[in-house]
Length: 320
Image (cartoon, rainbow, N blue to C red):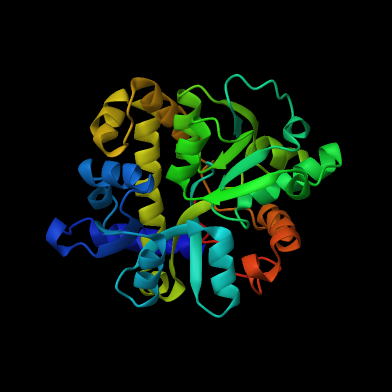
């Protein structure tokens, strides 16, 4: 109710406001991040002004820079997975989160591989982007143990590297399988690799809700409290952009130069997988998130979740 009342007040205040009068939302993002596709769609179609604010995108060379910008009040919002945001909130930082995408990675294998299950790559090398605490890797480890009684970490050789390096090495046939961020996986599939299992499939087998969005926008709770209705207004603009990209080829053509798609096949796979990652409208389910956080705490320990062994109260903004 508080968010609904805030949205009503926000709407009434913004009806007569000119573009120059609108409040500015400073959003810090990775310069090459895929979230820029949505943000460009918002700005270029005036969806921010439609909902009563002006979006200012601030590009950074890495995610750490964007997060420091929010902490130091040089930006109002940034993008992260909610597990990281939960860790910060549990440590005393008043961050809150609302969803952007449920797109996650998976395990891909060479196109000529005979592997039919995770068990079949035992003894081989796995290329992993994101390091030993990568959430896709942890979920796939739990899946292999439950499904096949297999210790995936002990039973394979892990090679950790930056996403572009894992991408190139995997295409060169260096690994029995590879785990990468979703957009690199899309390009890998478009280039002839096969998905052995997705993180969605593994999560479902583990009793987790695969529709729980992992990535989202976060900012200081004090920022949103000072501007009632702004969180919902931004979320509405985000959802409008998603609706447009889910239904318009022209909208994708407009952002194609940002996508670094080398071929039509890569472009189409990126488009397909991005749309598949659109979550249902509404806030993240604290109950579903709690199950995932429990697994992350079990496998990654305090190094991954810090003091956030349960979902901190107030973490998820109740957007509608």
